[in-house]
Length: 344
Image 1 (spheres, rainbow, N blue to C red):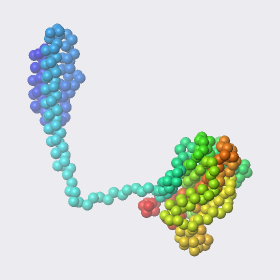
Image 2 (image 1 turned 120 degrees about the horizontal axis):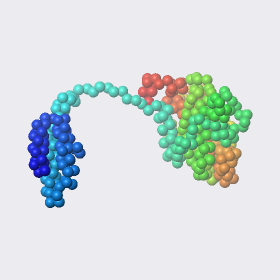
Image 3 (image 1 turned 60 degrees about the horizontal axis):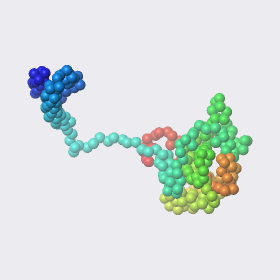
């Protein structure tokens, strides 16, 4: 067997020496050092040797294998460096030449607004609602019933809500308030969350309205939550979003799920309250609705209304983006016109 080992060694040394590139060297390596090589077959045959022969032949096999492996690795390194040098020489570039302009994408202005608002409310202690609590395809129970909407409320009419064929109570949600209901049903106070997302209403598309738009709603439920806290949170939001403190006013309003309910106006950013076409001469722009959570809503989600209170608010992302950047047509957000989008 020693003669056979030395014979294979001689052949392997010759073929390693004759290898001219990485490809031929890999063939030699597989031939003599792989699991199916002759050396490996000799190792398998050691079981047939006498106890005296095994250590001698085993040591010789290991020595020759290590020798061939080192030679292959050394030559592999030489070939690799040679091929790399040739490639670098062939692919070299003149770094003094002007580069080609590669246009890059932009974060959509609505996404920018959502990210900015979420960051503001995170600083105010609000957490982002979990995705499983915010489905866009919903049932009336979570979109209307548990939000204290009367059975005859006009928002339930087919003209305002998209209903799914074949399932009379399955709808495309008309507000992100459904996520607040689900959050309250699956957690205990204190609850302090915001919920951004898409909503759908059966509207005629115009410069001011679309049948798909985006909302961000907030909810805070705990002991001793007051209207004063709501006002403080929203005034701070206005300051941070518009970049400075701006006069606001809270007007009485009506929402089924809050009592009392208010609409919040901010001083017109175009005319600074003097009156212009944007604010219809009033000096004010409506930006969101809010109010104290109606006790009936708390009872419907098994929260003790005698112990806990809360406030909720909701705002349209498109409207806030249009106000901040003086955009006069909501359809621009959905037309994918790069001339518009690249401005942001």
